[in-house]
Length: 286
Image 1 (cartoon, rainbow, N blue to C red):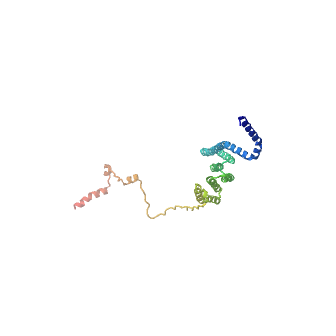
Image 2: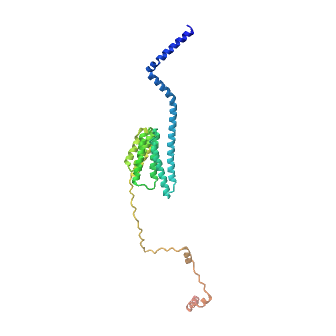
Image 3: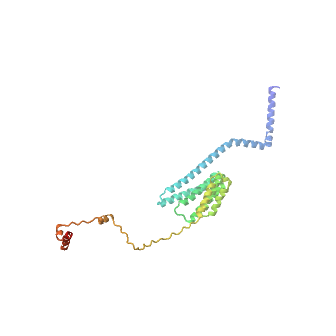
């Protein structure tokens, strides 16, 4: 067989294969599409994975910066002099605004634990604002604590890890405690202690301390009245009072007074005294 004849045979085979190609594609269309998708996935997956990691890192960095901003806001409130009421109010309002902004941002975070952490930190900032405000009425206290409770509850429902869940549940106990609901707070703390998944965390120990503290806080202390003691004047006794003479006066009183007799005074001695002086020797002589 010469080369020309072989070339004609190959051409006929190729033409025959091309003629049957649409039929082959139609029969194996599903397999062909699957293979194409696998190839596209292998090419594009590293690109999407890299983009996703960059997005998560950017999101995490943004949330971290927002949390740090809240901590700075708290520090600014503490630095304001107590007598500057207006500056303190403005700093507290700024803290509350940033906390609300973090709450809104947390709802759009895709990573569960990061979203839970954002809810928890926002709730902590809301509670801290109440503690740092000089005067808080009952309505404001209830409103703000309820907002913090809602944030802790969302964090508890969103979190994946035991640490974030325990942290959120512990915050719920603190909110109940601040509203005076000591029985409810104790129940929440006991749930934290009993939860097996929380054992490796620090929150069971903290919950036990809070339970002990709640019992101390609800205990009523009755202070005994101190009787008023009235000192009565001392009764007079028959003994004469002891008079204390000052040091200088005592020295003057003890010192003897020596009176010098002058010649004129000696000359004016009474006659009776002179007779007594002269008769005494005569009686001795007899």
